[in-house]
Image 1: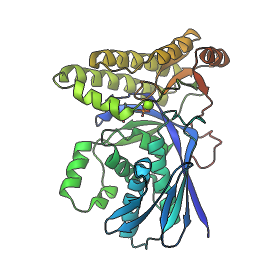
Image 2: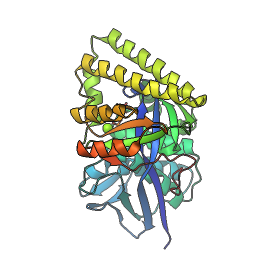
Image 3: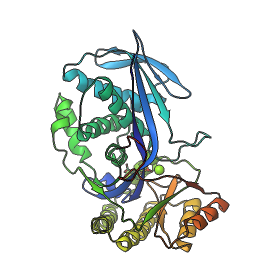
Length: 363
Ligand code: PMV
Ligand code: MG
């Protein structure tokens, strides 16, 4: 029996966090060369999902999947199966039983996640492998929409920027679709598959290229963080303070738009200035709404990088996970990494999956 394997990369937010959860507000995100891969082998009578340490079996019952075993660790995979199989069935293919095996390179050997977006990557890798297994050709927009719908069903407050980064690869400028519009569509329209061929208001993905004078460094604080918890904290805290929130959105957009222009015109200084400005904007945002975005370790990570001339900030929701730094050729990257190690920060040897990426099949 042939086996089918596809993968999806992890991601790092570079700028525009939190504001990107609002439709039309941009973020810059990069896909990195650490992957989740999904393999499917046909089986008879029973379907299984396995990861390195868990396994469940499931069967189809009318419109849903009947699962034996712990559902929670595989909730994104199960949602991706439900959505992708509906699409596959709608185009007239017959469904079969199979074993689906997940291999994730997005966690440290001690089991702690780096915060590289493993749930988005496993969702995209599952959609891709299923399409391959059932021999359905679909472009990246369909993959993105199937993965975004699968992901939102499980975690409804995300921007899906992580899903976009691991679908499209490289550096992207991303604005999220209007989730209210999507919710209303799903409530009023029986055939959600129509969504795959519609324009989603607000959604945009633009590929960017980092100027060759710049290089990305990534440091890991070793503390995992919960993005959904931090995002729902913002939803609570902003109540009654809409003006301050709108002001944050406006400032973030202005900053990220300038950075995107810096990418498009290949001006390194405009981009590094933008990183520092976005850090200040996020810091004011976090004090205003009582969030802990920049932890002690993230602050130290940035302080060290800045001391050697890098432009640094937290990546993503913060509260732990990783920090990112852009440096130019004059900066001593080894000195930064050594100082990080002394401070208990782990330098991650990651590269962006752009046109120079050597990792096969990342885009
Ligand atoms: O911490 P991460 O890498 O999952 O990034 C979260 C980014 C937010 O803008 C805070 C949330 C989102 O869904 O975009
Ligand atoms: Mg995070």
